[in-house]
Picture 1: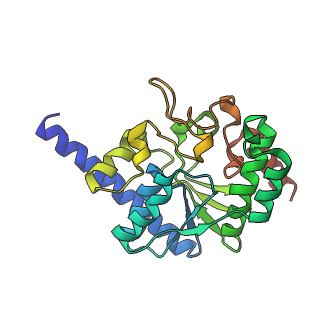
Picture 2: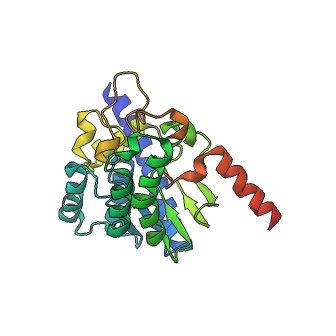
Length: 251
């Protein structure tokens, strides 16, 4: 890339970043109780950086499922060191986890979509309900190009599942744009990304992707692509969107 091309690229990134910061500041103004749900992966690190480095009064939280990679959990210390702030951590109910494992086994999620979603419900969705309780809005790092279930993602939408406003400030961003901001702004990121993990979840349910695969191919790789949501973003599915629309129309 020529010096002129690099300068042009940097200017576009600066413009995107300015728009992102303005969007987050507007969210903080309209919904001071809003919080970013962070998976500690690349997109969420970009958003956390914009919040922390920009001094915005928005909470960041993460869900420690008890099955995360050590590299993912290590990001909490990295963030505390870099920003002097780190996400609030929500964990699943220990008794519910123990009962599920006792009845179905520690790796039942490989056996069926229903059992996998039951595990996600206990380890991720139930803690998310606690994290969102009493809030009027939440923020995610989802992007449209990540998967088929996210192709119609809006930057702002009514979350019919959790009953609050949901903001997806990076919805229109490409993967290349995410990484451009990470490089230019020296944003810390999960080292698993350098090992072939573009999308990171629980350790037993995430693998590195192969050349040519989409970014979420490593998530629940034994399932079909149209089932690859854990319940945190159940509203992404067409049937959930339709159900939400029908409910709104009848209220």
